[in-house]
Length: 422
Image 1 (tube, rainbow, N blue to C red):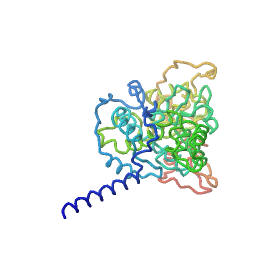
Image 2 (cartoon, rainbow, N blue to C red; image 1 turned 180 degrees about the vertical axis):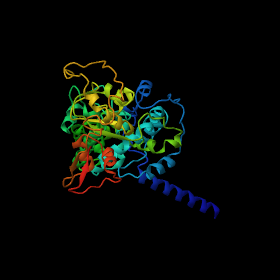
Image 3 (cartoon, rainbow, N blue to C red; image 1 turned 90 degrees about the vertical axis):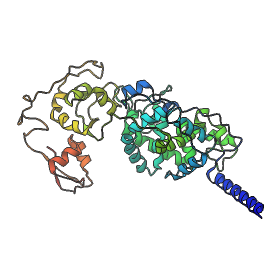
Image 4 (cartoon, rainbow, N blue to C red; image 1 turned 120 degrees about the horizontal axis):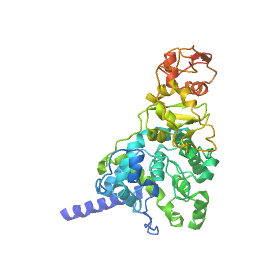
C-alpha cells in the first residue's frame, strides 16, 4: 500500500513539473542554437566611464554578487514582474541572467546609480504611445544608460539611434547638436519607433529584435523559418543575425536583474546626477563654460545633463537643463552669460573661454534687466489649452519660477488667467 502511494506521489510531481515547464517555456526547442550568449557591447561600463560620467566610487569585484538560485526561483521572480511582454526562462535567457549577475555586475551597479534619474523620462515617453513600461530597460542593453555612448557603427545615445533612423523620427543631428543624445527627445523617438515596429509585427519579441537589427532582417528571418503565419522570436531564432539572437534574452535578463539585483548581492553606486532638474529656454548662443561659472557648477556635471550639445555650445532657441538650485543663479546672471564674445562659434569652436566671477555690486537690486530684477513686473494672459510649461517656454523662464512669482502650489491654470512672468 505504501509503495502504491509512493508511486502515485512521484507521478503527481512529474505531472506538475511538466505543467510548469509548459507554462513558462522552460526549455527552448532543441533546434535552437544556444551559443549566442555574447552580452551586448552597450551593457559594459568601463573604469573610465565610471570616473568621468555617472558615478563616483570604485568598481566592485567582478566575483561579488555571484549568488546562484534554482530555476524554480528565477521562474517565480520573472512571473512576479508586472509585464505584458513574455519573459520565459529557458536555456538561453538563463545564461544571460547569469552573465548579468556575475560578469556584468559592476556595470549593473553603475546603471542602478542612474536608473532613478532616467526611468521617469522613459516611462513618460512609453506611456504617451501606450507601450509596456518594461521597455524602459532597453537602454540598459543598448547604452548602459550612458547618453554619450557611441557604437563602433555610429549609433549614439541612450537608445542607440543610427543617424538615418534618428532623422526619420525627427531627431536633429548636426555639427553642434545631436538629439540622439537628448534623453527626452530620443526617448520620445524610441517609443514612436517601437510602436511602429509592434504595429508591423504584432509581437513584442519580434518588435524588440527589429529594434536591434532592422525590419528587413526580421522579415527575411520569418520567411526563412518557414512559419510566416504565426512567427515569434523563438521560432525564427536560428535565422537571425548572431547579435540579435542574444538581444531579446538580454532584454529579459535586464528586466530581471534591474528588479532583483539585491538578491544577487549587487548594490547601486552613488550617483552624481541631481535629484531634481528644470529647463530654461536659451535666447542666444551660449557656451557651457560660462553657464557652469555663473551657476557654480562643475562643467562635467553640466555636460552630463546636456549631452546633446556636441561642442559645449547651446545654440539659440534650444533648452538648457540645470539642477533646480542652479536655475535661479542662471536667470540672475543670464545677461552676462549672453554677453560673452562667442561670435564665430558656428565656424570655430573656442576651446577656452574666460571664467566669469559674478559680482553682486554689478547686479545690485533695482538694476535694469530682462528678468531677475525689480525693474518692473510683466504678466501674460493664459490662452485656451495653455499650461505653465508652455508659458514658461514662451517667456524664457521655468515652471518653478512662475509658481514662485504667482504664489502657486499646483500646475492648473484657466483660460484668461493673468500669469506673472517677471
